[in-house]
Length: 478
Image (cartoon, rainbow, N blue to C red):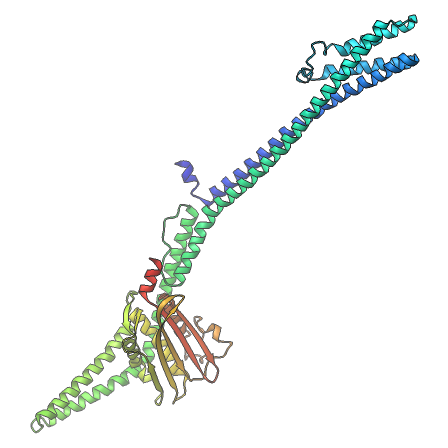
C-alpha cells in the first residue's frame, strides 16, 4: 500500500523512471565489464598457449639443425626455447592443461628440456646415441601435437567468448530498447494521459458542455492542478456573471426611456377610454361601453407584456436550457427595443411561428437585445434589420441557426477579429462599454453554440449564430 501511494505522484514516477534507467545502465556496464574480463582471460590463455606452441616449434627446428650441422649455437638456443616452453606450459591454467588426455603430456615439456641437456652433454663427449635421438623425435612430436591441440582449444574458447560477448551485447541492447519502450509507455500512460484528459475536459468546458473538471485522479499533482483549475473556473464564472449582469444593467438603463414611451401609449389609451366611460356612462349604449372596456383590457395586457418582458430581462437566475419558441423570444426582445429603433426603420422577420430553440430564456434574450441593439445603432433612419432563422446540422450538432443582418455602416476589416473582445468598441467615448458583443459571444458559447460576424464597410453587417439542440448533445455523449 505504501508503494502504491508513493506512485501517486508525478515526481515519484519520474524518480522511478530514472531508477529504471540507472539500473539498466549499471547492468549494462557490469555485463560489459564481466565480458571484458572474460575476454582478457581468454586472450591471456591464448597468448600463453601461443608462446608454448611457438617455443616448441622453434626448439624442434633448432634441434633438427643441430643434428644436421652440429652447430653448438643451435643447441643452446633450442635449450632456451625448451625452457621457455616448459615455463609457459606450467603457467597454463589446470583447466587448459586438462585438455591433453595423455597422462604423460604434462611431463613432456620438462622431459624434452632434459633430453636436450643430455644431448649437449653427449656432444662434449663426441658421440650421440640413437636412443636419445629417437626419444627427442618422439617427445618433440608429442609436444607439437599438444601445442596444436592447446592452440585449437584456446582459439575455440576465444571464439566462444567473442560470440558470447556479442550475444550478450545484443541481448542487453534489446533489453534496453524494451525497457525504454516500457518506460515511455509508463510515462505516457501515467503522466501524459491525465494531462490530455484535462486538456479534453477544458475543451468541453470551452464549448459550454460542462463547467468543472470532474473525476478522481490518482496523482497528487493532477488533483492539485484540477483543484486550481476548478477554483479559477469558479472565479472566472463569477466574473463572467458580473460582466453579464453589468452589460444587462447597461442595456436595461438605455432601454428604460424607450420602455417608458411604450408604456405611455397604452396608459394614455386606458386613460382616454376611462374618461369616455365616465362622461358617457349615462348615455353610451352597451355596445360602446363594451368596446371601450375591451380596449382598456387590451391596453392593460399590452402594458403587462412590456413590464413582464422588462422584468424577465432584468432578473438574475440560474442557467437552465429548455425548448422555447424563437418567434416569441424575438418579439419580446423587439418589444424592449422598440423605443431605440430609428423612427422609419424596418424590421423584417423570416421566422417560422413554431420554430423551436433550446436556450436559457433570459440569457438568450440578452443575446438578441445586444445584437439587435447593435444593429439599430448602426443603421440609418430608414435602415433595415432582418432576422432569419432555420434548422440545420453543424459540427456542434443539429440545431437552430439565426442571422441578424443590417444595412448599416458596417465594420472595418481590421476591427472584425476584435469585435468579441471585452471592452472593445468603435463607438465614441461614453457611448459604449464594449461588453455587449463580448457577453453575447460568451452566452452563445455557454449554450455550446457558435457566433460569428461578417461585414462589408458601407454595406452592412451580419451576425450568424448556431445553437445545437439539447437532445443532439445528450445523444453525442450518451
